[in-house]
Length: 385
Length: 213
Image 1 (cartoon, rainbow over the protein chains, first blue to last red):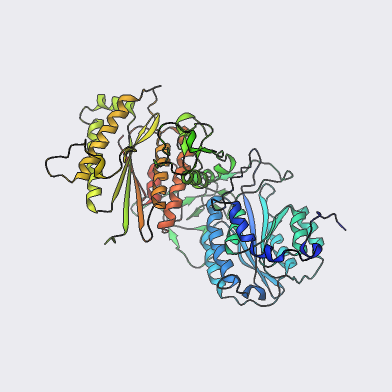
Image 2 (image 1 turned 90 degrees about the horizontal axis):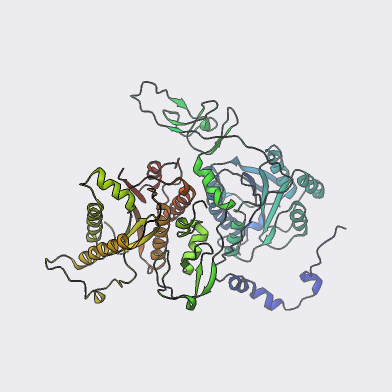
C-alpha cells in the first residue's frame, strides 16, 4: 500500500529473546540518560511555533481501569496531566490548551481552548470520578478537535496530543480520509500509547508529522508528556506574519479616587462565579474592556493581550544556551571550585562554558540548562545574550 | 514556631560598583560603602543569631564579576581553621565575629585588587542573582532527609539598571519563581514584571529589594 519503513516488528521476526527484552527496557532507558533524562537538544536556527493551540484527547474507555499504573491508568493520567498543564503554561505562556475525553464511542469536550491553567486543573480534578466505559473513538475526538482548530489563525501551531490506552477504536467513517483532512489543515497529531503500538496511530502520526511513543512505566510516561512542552519547529508552510498584540497596564484605583469607575471584568461574563464589579484591572488598549488576568484574548475586539514577561518567558526557546563542554577535572590548574555555587569539584568531570571558559560542577550545569537558561559568568563578558 | 529541622537561608547581594560609590561619596559624605557594609553585617548577624540553623551568604556584585564574600572558599566553616583570626575579647558569638572579619577582609581584597575598566555606572545584578540561585540549589541538594530549607535573597541595589541585562534578569526571576513554587505554591499568577518594584509584589517573600537611589 503506502511505503512503510522497513522495521522488524516482534510478530514479523519471530519470538526471539522475549525474556531479555521485557525486563531490560527500563534499565536501558536509565543507562542512556545517567543524569536522569537530561537531553540538551537545541533547535538552533529554526523557526518555532510559539503560539500553540493544543488539544489533549484523553481516552476514558474501559481499558483505563487497568491497574498497571497505580492506582489505575485514569487517575495516573489525570495527575500527570495536571503537571503537564502547569509546565506547559510556564514554558508557553501565550499558548492555549483544551481537553477532550472519549468513551462509549463518543467524544466530548472537557474544557475549551483557553489560556488559563486554573480552569483546566479544576476540570481534571473533577474528572477523576468519571466512569470508564465503552470504547474510544479516534475519529470522533479528532473531528471534535478539528471543529475548533480549523478556525485558528495560520501563524499559530495547531496540535493534538492523544493519550490512547485502548487497542481498538470505533469510528463512524473512514479515518484515512480524516487523516488527509488533518494534513491539509496542517494539524500535527501526536500519540502516547499506554498499551501497545497500534498501526492506525503510526500512520496518523507519520502523515501529520507528529510523534508516536508507547510508555514503559509511569516515569517514562511523564518524560514523554514533558517532551511535548517544548515548542515544536514551525512547519515551512505556516504563514509568517506580524501579529498584533496589546500590552495593557495594570490600573489600581481606590474608592476615594474621583475618576474611579467600577466595571465588570469581561472574562467573567460566561461564568457565574468570580468577582463582579472591580475598580482596577487590565484595560484593553483598543476597546478599554477590563480583564482581571493575562494572557487573554479580548472578547470585544479580538486583540491578544499579554504582558512583557510572558514573551520574555518564551525567549529562551529561541536562543537556547549552548551546551557546556565536559572535561576531566585533572586538566584544571589551581583551585578546583565551581564558579557558580562555590562547591569543591569532587566529581571526575567538570563543565566549562564555551564563551567565557568558566568552570561549573555537574549539578550547576543541570540547573543552568534546565531552569536558569543563562550562564552566570557570561553576563560580564558579553553585552547582549 | 519553626521546627528544628527547618533551615533558613538568607543570601545578601550587595552592589559594590566602585564608580557609583565614589560618586555617592561626593554627593553625601555621610553614607559610604563602609557604612553600607556595616549595616549589611548587622543584618547578617541578626539573621544568624535568630536560630542555630540559620545560614547566611553574602555576594558582592561588581561591574566585572561577582564574588562570594561569605562563606569564602578557603574557609572551611569550622573553628579549626580560624587560628589566625583573633577571637574577639568581648565575648561575642564566635561565628558572628568570624563572619564579620571574613566579610571585611574579602571586600577589602576585592576593592583593592580589581582594576576598573570603563566607566559604566550600571550594576550587573543578573549574574550575582544567578550565582545566588546556584548556591541555593546546591544547598537544597545537600540537605539530609527530613530537613527543609527556606531561602530568601535580599538585594541591596545602588546604581541604575543596565538595559542590556533585561533578558538575563528575567530568566533569573523566572528560575527563582519556579524554585519558589516548589516550596510555596501560593502565588502562581504572574503580574507585570517590567520594573523591580513590581517584581517584589510577585515574589512575595523570596526576593526583597532595597534601593539606595
